[in-house]
Length: 190
Image (cartoon, rainbow, N blue to C red; front, side, top):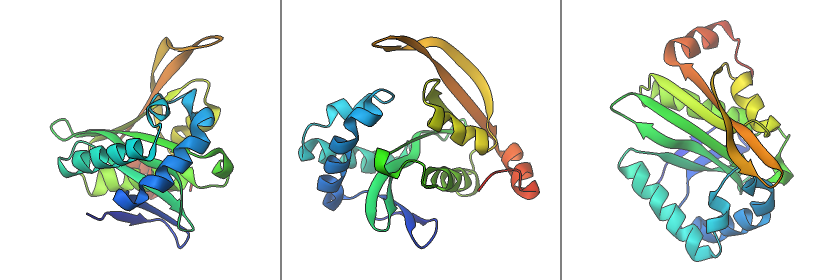
């Protein structure tokens, strides 16, 4: 099964396959400390076989239309992941999730990836609404929906426990008609 979304000559989003299990494990393992404070799943990936199960589950969710989890490949190297962690066909909405290795943060990779997923969601999946959830402490993650025209719709006060206290969960939303008007007026940052 193959699914690719090209962003430019260096950057491609693709549905990971069985052959990507080792690379995904190495990337997850090297990024574990960096991303675990905001995402729960890295602690579950302890061996390449766990990455294989994750890939198979992502493929299954893609086939049944409930999610679309893609690897981010920069110059043919997997550097993170992005996609719809949830797709609700009945209600016409999807939730985007994303992560990137520390080594590739701040290189202008994630924003165009999320922008491509938004475009795919509204144009190809005919979604009515897209949302992004993130931790209030994750400044880099928060900047992405803010740059891409999302509205902060909810703050889930002290919903995430950390070693040194609690942080808020943030929910950002974007409707198709808002995206269409912003794309036309070029308000959305590239």
